[in-house]
Amino acid sequence: MNATQAASGLYSFKAWYAGLLAPVRRRLVAARVSPAVITTTGIAFGAAAGAAIALLRPGIIAGLVVGRLARGPARLRESRRRRGP
Image 1 (cartoon, rainbow, N blue to C red):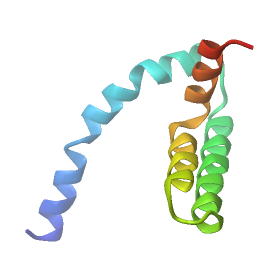
Image 2 (cartoon, rainbow, N blue to C red; image 1 turned 180 degrees about the horizontal axis):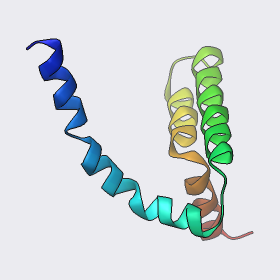
Image 3 (cartoon, one colour; image 1 turned 180 degrees about the vertical axis):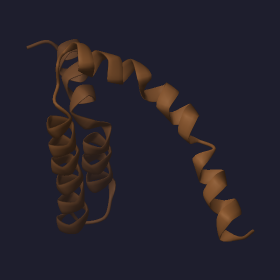
């Protein structure tokens, strides 16, 4: 496989992934969330996951912390909503 074939293989997922994100995108637009907020939130959660990987000892707790951070802020809000205030 050459570089051109590999690149076109990766881009073949673009339409599928865009479709997967369409409902999220519609909700964010309806809520008038700025793209800068999405970017900043992604950077913050990525940095927190990186810090957890760097600072926590390998094991189940580190895996749970990183897994929770990987789910992102929307999922955190949903889980809080299910648990109650």
